Image (cartoon, rainbow, N blue to C red; front, side, top):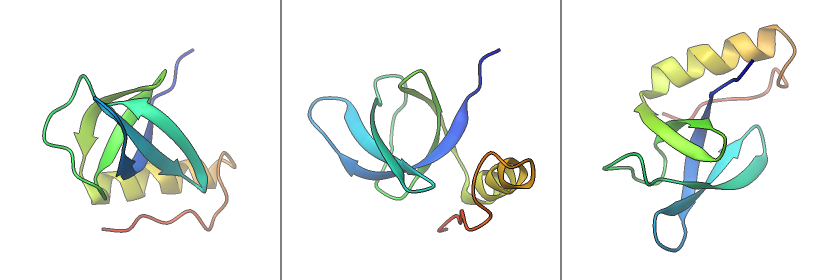
Length: 80
């Protein structure tokens, strides 16, 4: 089973890369498949690639569900 998760873009890297934050974990990903992303946006990440942009409300709901099932700390918050 594969899982795509919402993560917040915190900085841009070289070429089409960015660093995202998910519950305090930072990871470099590729933005090659999406357009018009800015720092602070939420993206759906799967195997190191942002697949699409996600609105902050949807990201908050999804992250809350992950927290509910114990995948993330309950303190995971979305900044809108």
